[in-house]
Length: 231
Length: 189
Image (cartoon, rainbow over all chains, first blue to last red; front, side, top):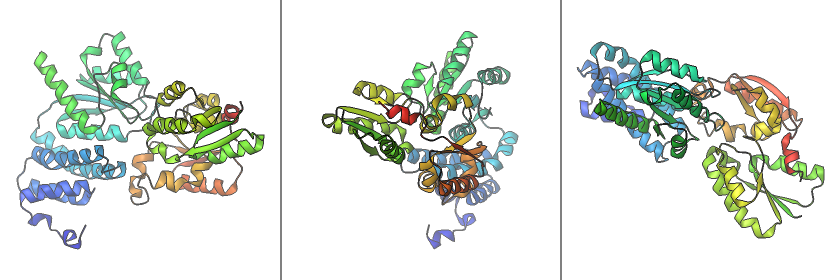
């Protein structure tokens, strides 16, 4: 970044310029700048939901595209996510106060035997940003944890994540248990993780394999729309 | 029987050591880049290409890879190519012994071998961007508890390097001498 850009005074930018600058700052993982810009937009009377969707989620969508295309790599995505998280930290309580569209409820967690949560955390954050309520079960979840949470939370979607080829078969155990209990079709089941692919997702009986967080959001929206149409 | 071992670059020293130790004069070694592990989906094609290049020159070819994050795809490919490979999920497992490793069921341990202790910065620290952004460390390693150094050799300098790695990652350190584990038996045909 040039010295000229370093000297940029965010508050002097008009709304359109500031939002574009936020997309750049998210891309560069500049958490403090995102924090400042979110506060500026709120001070200017923006609705928290608009700040979230037009500035943060749109910025992360661009990050997601460049990650998919091999232009950005995991470290850069993590920095961007860290910046978005900082902005979300300001917006979350305000969104609860002011209300925002709720598209559905997702229970998400990394499967038993697996402690890797980077991808799962990204999905959870993007789902929240897109208007889903997310119940994050964390890591190393046995089948009972998933099923208890789905029932307790009256959720719409189950999201399962695994990074290891040794743990990804556990997703099938969860889905098979849901079938045994006669509840499989009550939920949309989405799976993801680096070693998975579409074929695996189909083979274990999930509704869809999601290759990244952006795809997870779009897939969840599509399935929720279908679910509503069926009612 | 003239045999070619197509190995992961991370196993080069160990395979050469075993060839020398056992006087396996019929064996030759070729290696694929160790950094293929950063993109495991590329391993099966790379192995297939290497097998194709060597097929006519050797009576037997052995693939010194375990599953290595390919989710069974490498095993399927090797079977289709008619070549054998190492059993187990990865080198941490076969160095410790697949049975013993599975029995431990350690999910919060991060492993180093001699190779990774020697190449920690090149294969762990820098590819994860931790040289430029050490603040990301806990996003990657926050759920791990200890670094286990699975040592193939008794080398104090590697022990020190592994301890430094554990310290950089903020993990407890444990050393386990494994020797070559199941690798020696896998190559002893």
